[in-house]
Image 1: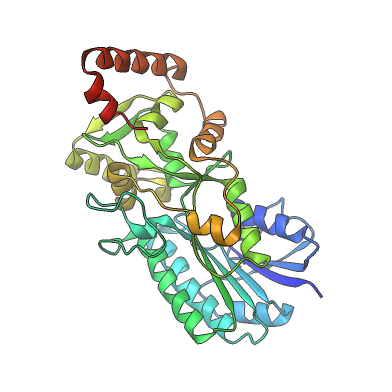
Image 2 (image 1 turned 90 degrees about the vertical axis):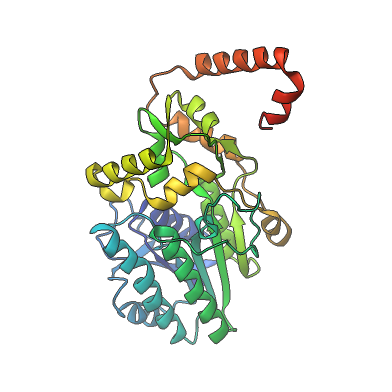
Length: 351
């Protein structure tokens, strides 16, 4: 018999697409999708659906009933229903319940967990590039990043208790693409982008399709371990704004915090509003090393960070400023600066 794969978070776009993709593989005999809400209308007939509250132990029954040997945990997310407290409970308590069910499943052979590079945090004294073994200066103060850090801690404990299970943790950079249903995607769709005065953070992205491929490789026999997953290259926030054709409004940090609080009050739904971790990212940025992904899996994302963002821009409402004209103006200004201070500006200009 082939693999029997259980996928959590299958009611969300990424989970539904992954369940459909993995069900097409000849190595997979059956896919069982679970979530706390009704299944999406486009769920393929080859995926069996079980409506299960992740905070309840009923998932153990589903694993036993279907003889699941591979669990893909995608239900660790910044988005959800019922406010921040409900999202945290789903992320953390839901993971604890799932790991408890996996602990009791003697036939379980592989566990794949979707995490985030946000576990490294974003701080002014951070290293230029984070590797998988780099320790953050401090644990994330709250929000989705803190949830993911707690989830990874529980997963490490499970791996010690069940050394017979191959455990893989994929730390994704910000996932973007045509669907783009994330808080950062919502930020980039604003008509005007508030930014931190005096800061131009470096950002990395991974395309939705590459995220799905990384998950597929992890399920079908990739060496267990923790991997950073991000497209090659970086973009500055100012470069992102120019590509979108959106003006920026630099604000001092207290004013930026006030804007964040206002969006948390006014945003609908609230989970797409500014969070503290997003403010940190848009101030200090974050870049990760993906050498382990290439060396141990023999694979790297097909799209670079700039290519991923270009695909997102292509499916985004146009901004008020034509990107071509905006880029031409900034290039002309840079050329004038080079004429007056060639050495200085070439050293300061990001490569």
